[in-house]
Length: 365
Ligand SMILES: NC(=O)c1ccc[n+]([C@@H]2O[C@H](COP(=O)([O-])OP(=O)(O)OC[C@H]3O[C@@H](n4cnc5c(N)ncnc54)[C@H](OP(=O)(O)O)[C@@H]3O)[C@@H](O)[C@H]2O)c1
Image (cartoon, rainbow, N blue to C red; front, side):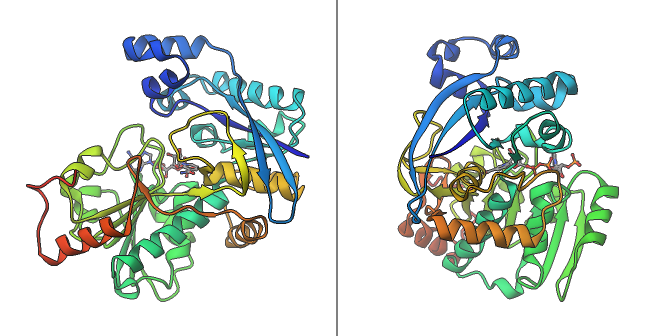
């Protein structure tokens, strides 16, 4: 039996803490933040039943790193590292042979490098498979929406980050134009220079309001702690893959724009009869792509720090996609704001676009 661990943390502070401690729902947010900061990491569930197509089996543990996204970015860096490393030490003590970094545990600092240096087991951010599934989902959703992808303009929000830069590279030669969107002009220029642009035109923008309304396809993967994409930013017919956790797309978009398609990045079907022992808001037997990368490395017995730091190569994406095929991981259909995106829903969005409705006066729910 192969063994892994995966670090999770509350992404939506009160809601996620309340899944385990219902009283949190009634407490003020600053108090919940204060309490989680004081809480030590611990094992929150035992994951059983993962079985590869090859017959290999794995078990694992979710280990909670009690900090909110804002705390990961704003608290003293060493305090945050120490908390993540403590999670890794717990994983070592219970026999895990690899550990995956969930959400902001891989966003903070050097994206896992320091954490790995302080552990005796390998570490992976899971970002390679996150990129692979995000792009697979985006292109499939574009096809279903009838987007003319080769002539499309694609926007990448958070384009200077680990996942964003690699998503941009995967769009090259698939679309006519790519707009790299971020906050920092210097970093954007560097990201553009590092992109092998092929036949695709590449532009940069630090003005989301000005650039996003021109985009037919959007992959959004910033580390912003609050939503940054609002209803007025989107072109009718746009297809948006929101990989960020917490989400970059505001709930208001889902309520008032019935002429755009939003899908979540990286919802993956896990092989076997998996029981996660924890409700993280997904349908049974499905997981985030970053969790899935950790599981497939364990099933393969490939105990190495597969994705670490901010540079991800196309070779890594190819390798992780092969591992996914071999062990039976696959994209689990589309989801958006906790709901399945059905073919009927996609058809309805297409019809709304054809009718030339802006959707601004109608809700989809
Ligand atoms: N769905 C999944 O399975 C999955 C898996 C892994 C990670 N994630 C999520 O993916 C996101 C990014 O992860 P990452 O590893 O790529 O992080 P990263 O390397 O730190 O990159 C984040 C990027 O977002 C940019 N950014 C931050 N705030 C912004 C804002 N307000 N407007 C525009 N850009 C902004 C940063 O630019 P600056 O240089 O300006 O700071 C940076 O380029 C996180 O939300 C994480 O939780 C999801």
